[in-house]
Image (cartoon, rainbow, N blue to C red):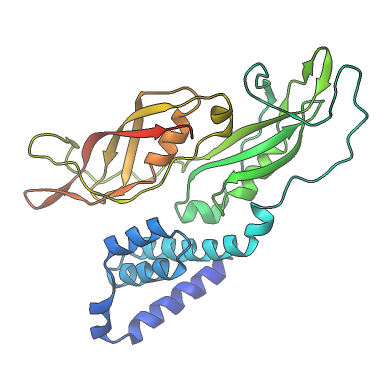
Length: 302
């Protein structure tokens, strides 16, 4: 896989070399391409155009990330039917015990509470994803059997290069068995697997973040991600606005976020959303500076 990506990077670099200089005048800007990706995340051409821009600017890490994004989008499109559209495998249910009218798993919500996890297995972070700086939260729906084991799992919110590692970890989890009226039952519930990049090089010394207000205007968002509404929260009727304090780096990316006013079961989804947003860099006396500002994520039941 790594060799393939390197060959692709070399190919893009070669294409850039032979493109006439005048052709670059017609190329969309970085902000325009980011806006296009926000509007159409499956636009592979936009990732490749960004890679060209980054190679020209000698931002090779960013160029490699765009190439990997393009490759993963293609892979996701090819496997979309089986990865996201395939229903859970059908298993022949055991005869229903007395007092239970159906063997269909119950969904965690209301009076049916989430069981306690008694065995946790951390995911193995794929080396290629770490190298590419890919992180985030994979959300899955699982079926917990009557013994507390994970019988089935499927992806609800995908990060293509991390999905398989998440499923491999989830399938090893163990929960306390759930009973209803003294009879063991299966449960369906939503779980998350968080992939966080480990220790990184210390950031270069720079200006302290300035707070938005007065002469410091709130930067314009150029890449937006809508929040994923956890099904368990929807089923329980949980909604509201999560208020977050975010630090926007000199490159316009969210480098830090913390909840100021939360909504239980929605905070994690809100943080995951905000950390993917991108803004126009803020300039102070012509110099890019990080800023601190308050943002909100609204979860509204339809």
